[in-house]
Image 1 (cartoon, rainbow, N blue to C red):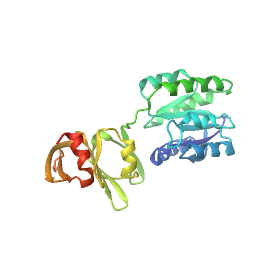
Image 2: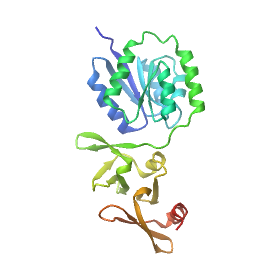
Image 3: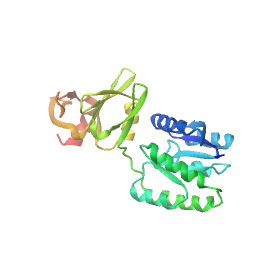
Image 4: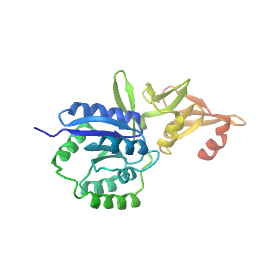
Amino acid sequence: MARLFKAIIIDDEAPARRLLNAILKEQQGIIDLIGEADTGAKAISLINSTQPDVIFLDIQLPDMLGFDVIKGLDCKPFVIFTTAYDEYAIKAFDELSIDYLLKPIKEERLLKALTKLRRFSSAADTPAMMSAFESLFSNLKLQKQVKTLSVKKGSKFTLVQLADILYFEAYDKYTFIHTTNGEKLFCDYMLSVLEEKLSEDFIRVQKSYIINREKIFEIHKYSNNRFTIVLSDKAMTRIVTGPSYFGVVKDAFGV
């Protein structure tokens, strides 16, 4: 009979947790999902109290790195990292005995990781692995930018390429994504969170708008402390910048 691994997901992004949760539930003959955590501190407490066999661990959490989570554990579960590291880092992970999943996680890649997990018989080499990871983390830069966002469409989640996004709009208590093909999609993140997650291709120009720099067609002076930004979609969408963002827009575009 195949071994059943008790598992915990640690990731600060709710959409990423939901996506991984949904995939793992299809593997109930291998994985028994017993909990989730969205910070390093919560993860350490949960792991030490439940003693899982394997953890799916995001490398960068709001309060610490994934490596710091591992150092705070009383037990030594198998670790499958979820990562946004660059190609060089991925090659380094591949040479170690712990697997990685590159975000956005794909089901076929996860199945390969689970196959690798089942081949593990002990964690005898854990100290050597931890030393290798410590060296890796100290010499690599985490890429700030993500390439996709997970959004809900009906009862399913789908991935939207950032290159296909015109702008983000905050309205009432919600955030919406406006795409180049005219779609308006609900987004889980507040604009303040998106500001931290997104690459420099995106800029906040008003309290309610973050726009894709690559989709700007024209910029016009609107008043003494505002600009009108015209986007390159078919509708030639116009967004008026906020007074408090005047300096940011002026410096960013030299207008």
